Image (cartoon, rainbow, N blue to C red; front, side, top):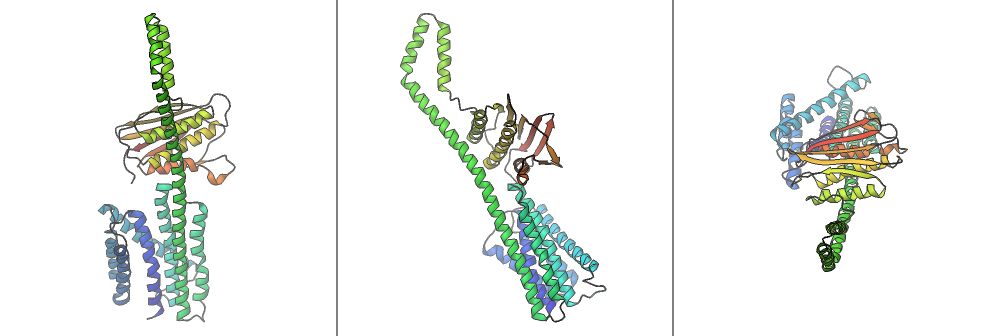
Length: 429
């Protein structure tokens, strides 16, 4: 077997990994996992390699590649249209990476015309094309992650993209060394792709850890909200026990007022009893316990900082939107509003609404702010000293909204900041 065929077999392993990452990010849930899943991708590798080694007809190579991509998509729970799009996108990305690779190598005079390539030119063009395909797959994988949990930190991107391109340097030095033999070139190629595979793997692990960290933070806030709601219910229960114990005395007092035709005192006494029954810390009381808990917790936080909250809340009987997403949306909106209002003296107020109509959830938050709001397109820039955290709250809100095909609009007027959200009451896509 010559060096070209050996390099092709090694590089196709990395190509198969990239295709797996892309299709999984594009199509989501798999029908079969474990042995069947890996068997499909091993089958893809074997068929593509066999056709390249023994048929060597370009049209057959292209056709077999597309056919095997279609076979791979059959293991995913998606529509035919979306499966077809995944095949088109991954093949278009492959062609684009090869075209950019070839053009760049020609400009640098690393690959010369006319064809055919020398062995070294073939190897370096193959390595470059796949390393260029790598960030394209990474970009879509990160887009899928952003829809669900937020943007990956910039350092992740730097490591995941800079290091693969850095591996091209030793590749060039070794592959174009006149003293390099078959095994040196093959080992270099294998090491380059192995290093890139490790980077891809660890990038995925870091993203997974980062995602778990975000989920943990959201669940902690949600746990605090439920704990707060439990305390409210416990206080109400204790209040009712005390009230029940004293009910005879209350009835005697009321009867005394009524026997003396003192209606005004009876009404006043009833109002006082009503206030005793009600918990002053329960600001929202609706049928949906999740929204009720989150709202009571957040409004309680605002009141402890002497911030008044006006709210209008009406929820449907069934909420299909994830409680985690609602926690992120409501929590971040309140966090931003409270932080802005702590910089203002005097009367401070938050106006919040959560309404439902015709299958649509409408959420609005309005508050005053001090200073300037800076925009970079749709991205909001901060005036905080820690620039690494700028706009992360609203970015998290926007990402949650997008998952439900919703829209989010941020407007400012003089010293008023307002966020309007419209999203479908359905399960996330």
